[in-house]
Length: 119
Image 1 (cartoon, rainbow, N blue to C red):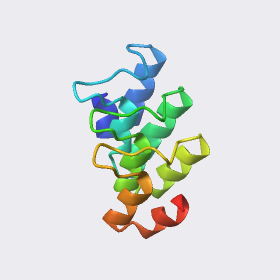
Image 2: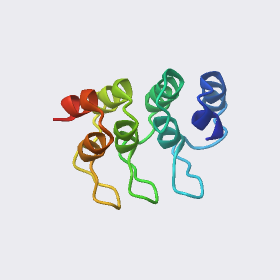
Image 3: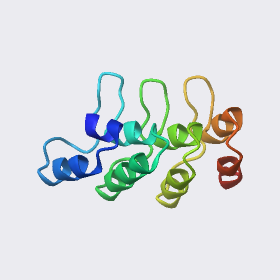
Image 4: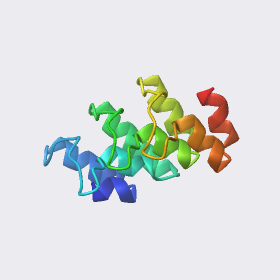
């Protein structure tokens, strides 16, 4: 999970290949590696997240705050990851514990390009 949170694509790939832990394993905050990668707003986060999705990471799981990978990506303005998650079936109707959907979070954070994709 730490490798995904740091955007270390090659490390994530190697760990997935040796099956060191389940792809949807959670940390103490209920976050999966996909969620941690989705919290990044850069190319490395996208690459790690896309890799995890290709290894069948669950895209609609929620963490302890009720956030999904889509909500995290939308909150950070990660347009490419938002598009990728939507293409893989990410649900837009889920809301976090504060009542924010991905659309509402993107709107709140001022990410107009993400808002346009989510509408």
